[in-house]
Length: 114
Image 1 (cartoon, rainbow, N blue to C red):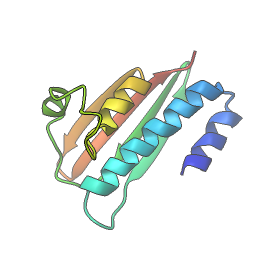
Image 2: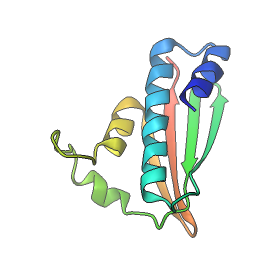
Image 3: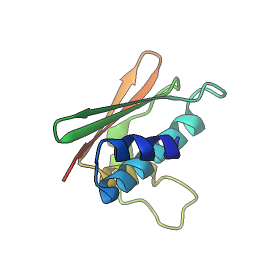
Image 4: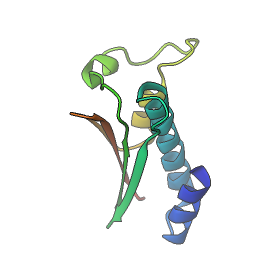
């Protein structure tokens, strides 16, 4: 997935630093989806480039979570085994949106191309 994203962004002329941030943010969202979603179902990833904005959506089939509660614990403890993924995504991108759906969670990541 990382390689496919890298090539996708390179073909669209997105700067390397922006590409690196987006690839890492997407990987973190996918890691969370695989870790907390329904076992064996993985996740779906969609990428849209429109004007000067990239939008990445990562959807799983898990039971969801309260994003505001997660954000209330930021910044995460550095020495913990986990709990830094969403914080890292928010740090690397311009906006993160988490939508609880009937069948899973959708993480939507926004990044301006600069």
